[in-house]
Length: 173
Image 1 (spheres, rainbow, N blue to C red):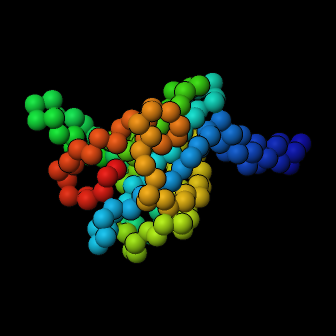
Image 2: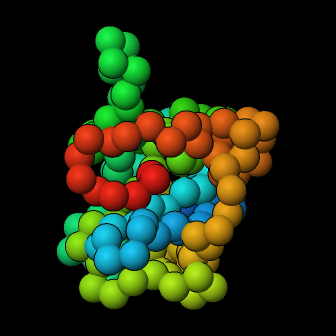
């Protein structure tokens, strides 16, 4: 009886992470690189939480960067200039919602790149969710993609404002 119970517990422990991941969908991921000689890049996508409970993207990792951080832009109402900041608590993913990671808004910053990201290559990005755990995503590098100013689709959502960032990252994240 003890062996059977242990086997059931092991099977559940192995299956639960896979079941938890099934409600996070990742749509239209892509990466952009900054100007030549700037060691940063940005990753965008749409995260869809189809599950019954809220979740949170708490971390991202890319082996080819010194640091990978979750970022957003804050608009200074007095100057009209947007500033990029790290979001240490991560991005909330309410149940049944879409969360765009788009230019001019929430996004993933790749800082201290080991080598430039080249158009057409694929990079492997690891996303860590509070509930769903770790999900690996293959991300195409597409530095020519234009922002989607219509507010639709998995990229852009009308956020390509071109504001200065004031933080020296040198990308249009």
